[in-house]
Image 1 (cartoon, rainbow, N blue to C red):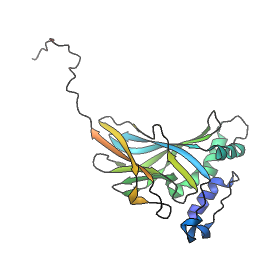
Image 2: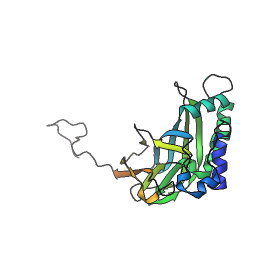
Image 3: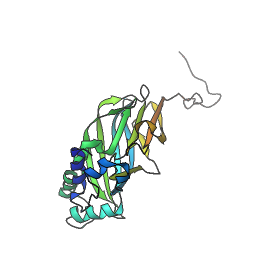
Image 4: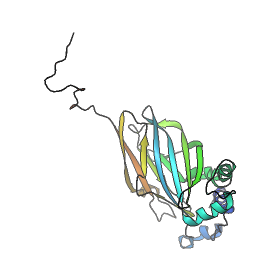
Length: 231
């Protein structure tokens, strides 16, 4: 595991009393030395379109109960089960910002090549009614992507197995702002980009878009038998 990744993952947990039981030496020796994940995340993503090009991805994470409890204990200073103002900033600075070191666990590919994000904006941490911590943030692209011209896919995972990230069962991938495109996603195992010492094929969502076709059945509001004056 790289030094940067070790620091980023340690930063994610250092304020939450989570102990990383597998060190660098153990991970380097053999696949059998894997530690189980220490944090679980349910994730979904929304592709944001402008002028029918993908310009950003909105991401929502929902953490497991144990990790949420430690986060609440550490950062909810006024005990109102919300993260407001300085509390939200503290969560961002101490438990989120370091994840930029490895793409916020969000892996976007264009024609099978990884695409780097320009940065993360609009970060909001919150606490649900059942006391689970959520993150909402927006990952910006440096260059818009054309889902008609190129093959676009998105996977969410931690390649080092400390964090288990999985798409939600309901609405794992959404689309916003595609005016002249009809888009859907197709879920499959990504055999081309295996992780965990090549033992696991992560789940990928392939974006499939096509230009909308005009509805020939529409009469523009005219009823059968109506006449149109043509000059």
